[in-house]
Image 1 (cartoon, rainbow, N blue to C red):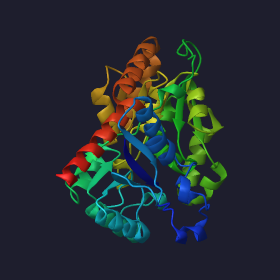
Image 2 (cartoon, rainbow, N blue to C red; image 1 turned 30 degrees about the vertical axis):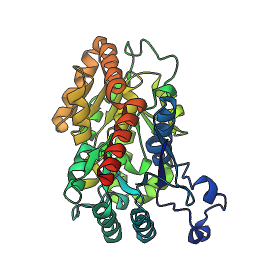
Image 3 (cartoon, rainbow, N blue to C red; image 1 turned 180 degrees about the vertical axis):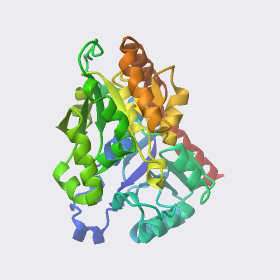
Image 4 (cartoon, rainbow, N blue to C red; image 1 turned 180 degrees about the horizontal axis):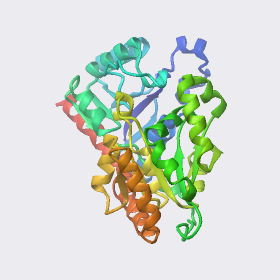
Length: 371
């Protein structure tokens, strides 16, 4: 058995971390960040899939007393992570940095949300560990291209979808008469992305119902500039919609089981959005819903892999208008398009498929380091 330790969101189990809220038992069990998707999607689901597949690779939370073939710094960086990475490499352990955000590209444009623009400290920390690591894993093809300028040993491993969480029964005929159900999920603070295509959605408002699966809307309103807040309030007043509180991926997929169409409009003028993964659309596609999406590179990758109509890339405001009018006028085709959407997730993004990709890159990195 070959062990791989994971450090998640910079939670290093060390004495200094006791002051940061680390439970004492983390020295024995590892320090998880159970509320983070990074923990369950890019670590726990992969670990379970490899174990179920009887892989020689065992993924577990990093524990200081254990010996590992490799340690993955999953969205983990900064001085304490770099210090540990140095000790590990001196001991002959491979250090792998796993990136899911473009902290590297400087952004001087309009900041609609502060969290979407890296700080100087974040950029410096990300550059340092990316250059130092034996290898890098990036969560989108676009981000991998960015990381490769700093470390040529970079691989793209996409986000994965645990199909075991799919509802056992899906709505079989959601595309008949009445309003077409459109679904979006994400942080409420990012609802401003709808302003990238607001006119198109308003134009079909009499024929659709928007569902937002999200978190703290009140807190999000306080984070938006006044102009953005006013535009969003006017947008929401003009289109039928329902807010659903997010209670985890299983709950989200249960909602998606009602059927409809996944939508993901995005502004494409920020490095953050350009490097974003396909997860926002692939989760809905796993529940047999076709997707309409802005040309985020990861969405384009899914579209290229998909059967006809599974993903429609909306290149502009006019493109959104045409795509929305298209799904409304061709409802009888949506069920078939949804099946194609599910098939591409099953073939390329299912947890077991991605786990094998992930482990293969770990194995290649370790073999190269030992040769």
